[in-house]
Length: 558
Image (cartoon, rainbow, N blue to C red):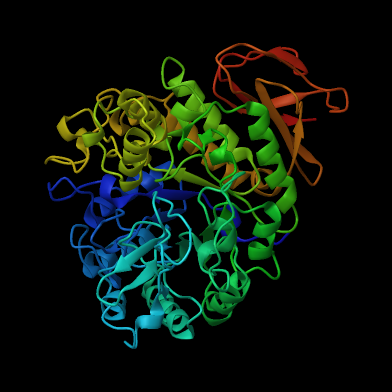
């Protein structure tokens, strides 16, 4: 296993619209981020990943890009971006940008040209097809509900959009499209970018002929996904990207890859032959999803253990995991996997221990380090996210679900849970803005905020800081192999990390009860030194002990 900086780093994701507003317009911006770099340096992270800051009409909050080489007016200018990256590099921080090249905005000049006529030079930059007698070219569905095809009256043909109708899919079969993308990537890398997070990168290659989909079943999110997830030319396209762009720079690359298996991930990220450094998988994110009803279902700890162990062992020695519990598309982890009531602080620390003690690169999403929670807005009108609004409409208008039941599901799953503004202080506007925020604040900001966390030595923030420091000082945190113990236990998740004769034991209580940990006989050790824990621990039997609610302990064994 090769040692590299991107395996040893800790990444912090910023959702720019919700991070820090410098000019009082209620929208986070680049200069707001610039003003918080010292905070991020204090936390101890190494890499900042920015969700898209490019020009965009914001149909999908920046993931619909109209100009890849300019900055959204609300966020600032290219000069602001240059100042931001210089400020990061001066502090020893690296910058990863979002690369969104499965689709563009329908406002992008390429698409504006493409839709003008069937013989336009840009027509083949996108995926156009004549419809069938009864409608669209095939029965594929979009991720945000409805058909994946939109009829364009100008030419009487349909274009493919796997997401909103304002996000037409690029045609990666066209070598001119690939060249345009690669040139753009070089442009940003030469400007100072240190890597890319690649949005839905495993959807670039579609099946030849775009055949109809089989009936939806299993873990597939949408009808048709078997024809565009890890398609036949994906590794070819990414191999070309590696050869023409990525191999020329020492950068971090992580692909967002829904519905992949560990073997799929190895094909994309193998130490020697893969195009990317790592991928985001979603199996653990889908454990509480009810795809049929587009809602939630209870998750089980044994299922979480099985998924994470499959990925830890499946990539061991062959590829590298990216470890995360939240991002801009997911609910807050303390509300999802922990307890956002009386045990909020200890459960946030337990989840942090879990994420940072797995083998792989840990990712922190803004606000996670202070234990921010889900929000329960009283009305669908309070939600901004296009996916949330679409799901609510389908559930209430097409499936006949009671609006309050639908809203309760949205409280659990909406992407806006992660998008409420960063809570910097208890002041009006939560220290995020002096104006009216683009989306409402979580009402708990007066008690859960950075100012409070920095004033409390026992806060979630300082626990994250300690975990990051331990990871930097102990190679076993990074490179140690993972082995699960007590696989059948319903409340405790326990595993070991091993490197060069050194061993760590990680014991995590995922419940509000007090189960007993008993080390299995095959785990031989006579003493255990506490490395970190989220409760004070007195001396006692290190092979058998009772865990408190959401307790986490990491021991060095001897």
